[in-house]
Image (cartoon, rainbow, N blue to C red):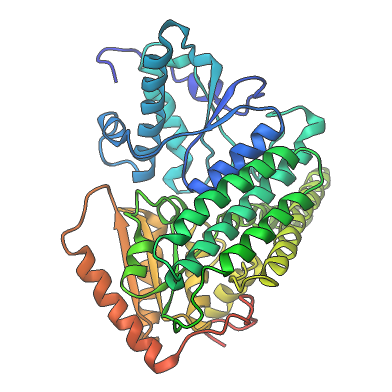
Amino acid sequence: MEAGKIIDFRSLSEAVGKFHIGRKKVLLPAMNRISAHLLAGTFRAFGIEALVLATYGGLDLGKQYTSGKECYPCQVTLGDVLAFIRGERERLGRAFHPEDYIYFMPESDGPCRFGLYNKFQRLVLDSIPGLDRLKICSLTTQDGYSLAGLLEEERVTDFKKAGFLAVVAGDILDRLVWRVRPYEREPGATDAFAEGALHRLAASLETWGAGGNYEPVLAELDEILAEAKDLIDPQLPPKPLIGMVGEIFLRMHRESNQDLIRLLEKYGAEVENASMAEWVNYVSYERLREARKHLTLHLRLLHFTQLRTCLRDILDFGLNLLFQEATQKKIYRRTRRVLDLAEDHRIAHLEKILDRSEVFSFDVRTEACLSIGGILQCAAGGYNGVVNVYPFTCMPSITTSAIVKPLLNERQLPYLDAHYVGSFQPGREAALSTFLYQARQHFGRHGRKRRAETRNRPEGLFP
């Protein structure tokens, strides 16, 4: 930041929050490249110009404005937006107006540092001449990522439905790659196919996303799955199955995790990463859970005036979660008719696993709920190893590691912590090859799960 520049902290509330997008260009961070481009297509369906930021090329800029104590994804995303702005200034010259853009950076409540990304980045932008006029659009977990205020009221529901469809379709396209690439007939064919499939789906969402008729999008997805199936060599034997959990940005952002899934595949594994929709569902589930707790509290205290608000929240968040889970179930059932992809789990199932295990609780919150529950589900579901991916010093993921390591050691299920801070660790490949050796040994002793099994089995690690 500029030396001696006075920071006006009012911008943290006045220039960070929900703003009507109007005709501004929306800048989307590429946390997950596939999902980001599908969401951009959805924005365009509603007449909003959306750009997916090129990623990782501005990391030096991100580090220039940070101390290294920040969460690593904060450095990455800050560098991405600063690099984009620098490029736009060079391209447009005096025609560049920061107020024409709006930077999309959601947040969460609770102890996770993700809730402070947009505040810190706001201070950085304010320290650069002219960039105080570039607003940061922030959805928050406090209202379940409500879209109210971003668009005209009558368009919010349609956009929400199309946006969630984009998230689920992105998950399926990701899982298509992870399912097919380890068994492809021709090396490189899956990646080339997935790139074309991404553009096909984005174009379909842009064409049909705003109309409420999503059948053309699902039909396009059906065709993509059928074509991808032909890339598989059926003669290749099954490989050890590795489950991946952790902090959502690091486990999804290939550049930040140094293309970990591809490296695991190089050593002979098939990988299933946790989904993007998992986090969206968790936010709705947590808000519903919180509303129920408030209702119980106000009933005990006889605060009858607050009951209406609690009941409204229960209805809103409950219907929202019901819609999301029903949408997922419908789409996954349809895709599994074509290709045997892993289904997604219900968040209530993960809470049930944690309650039965008595090792953690949803009352603690954070992504540790999802990671610990997901790991215990992997242990019960026939996986051959688990990787926990996270930024260095990430509290929820360190908590996860401390809890699950002794449990998995007792069960003799291979486990690996993979933490990142932007540098290459000298023993990284040795650690990965050792982990995969252990996974192959586990695979030889126990085999692996059958794909026909559901991911929402009633039992967990502790039946």
